[in-house]
Image 1 (cartoon, rainbow, N blue to C red):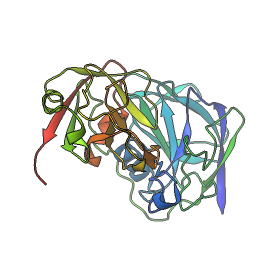
Image 2: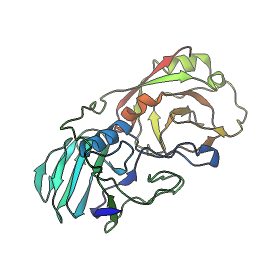
Image 3: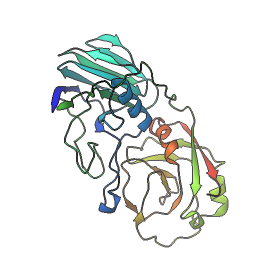
Length: 289
């Protein structure tokens, strides 16, 4: 059952429907997808009284604008940006009541990359394999938003508390990623692996929902034979032929054939989702289990 709709007025550079993603389907060759900055989506859902896994909108750099067809309550979190309702300034990071017919506009991100718009009741597009998330790699779920799209809104959860504020960290001015070595750290020169923690990298502009790409010194291989394709996990740091580390994010492929020098813990990945191109990046090597 739906009680309202959001009609897309301006889709922005890339706006997709995202929840917490598809779990337990990697054996089918299906990526997890889901919000790149999970804490930001969870916070937006709390602010409007949704369950944590309700679907919302993930914007990229340029924001978006949608019209409420029916009165709704929304909240915007993630990358800081201006929020307007029918041209009037509205709160960012707090619940906002939007009357029927009003346009909610999320402006360009002033810091960070990805913003999140939650609506009370959630975006109620049909789920695919247990999730409403758009997956850019496999094409599962709804396509990225286009002008004129109409998104159904579900029934709000009655009596669920709505906090006035949910604290979130600021987008990083330096991205620090812990790195647990393996399974193919021995495929690289030991000195080159050690230098991962010393060398200065930056976030490359070529990144997307599939992976964060880096610019900086190449990681030199000690072994040059072909590696059979094998399963990939969220946060895997793959080293392609150019030697620049690639950090896999939510839409990553389920298999890959380049060696993985290590894995970034899931807790560090929301900051990666908000790191703009050119942001300094530093790896911190973790030892032991």
